[in-house]
Length: 115
Length: 113
Image (cartoon, each protein chain N blue to C red):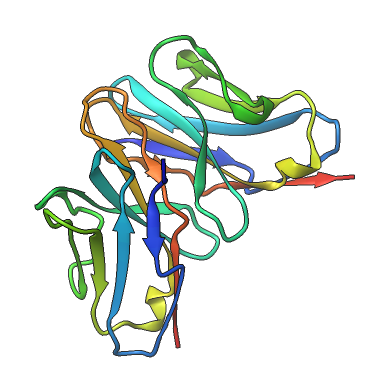
């Protein structure tokens, strides 16, 4: 049973380019969460999605960042016109649909470096 | 609003010594509490979780944590440190029925031979 998968694991972009980060949740999981980890900081919540719906995007920067979780395929975190401050590790987590005590399971992360 | 405070961003212990990593939380409703471990350049792995059942929670790799409501604490312990325990540990809180998880800033554990 494969865990949460993220790709690419490492991504290098120049300022002004676009970054696309992909997350495939665990089998049977329909809830996806994105977190950002800046150097020497903990993880900060960005967005929570279910299939085709954004449930909570209170942690997303107002500009340049967007996320989707289509009916088919992985969840995508998109960063337009990247700046050096976007350099961070971006983690995706997933949880099952059943309500209650579900735990979020994390992927290995994508480490974005903006030159 | 929920929040987590981890006391001590760096902790050093000798191999074989007791490990104690501190975590205090703030939550307006009974929380779910978690400890995750992160090894260098890897994702987060769940160590253990508290979900309102037993207050003493046992996790993987010999770790355990005790939920103390009166102290709003959820400290992580291990009786005897092993070199392989060197990693960064994150305490996290989620309010029941709410999906957003709030993480502490992390504690880096160093194990000295």
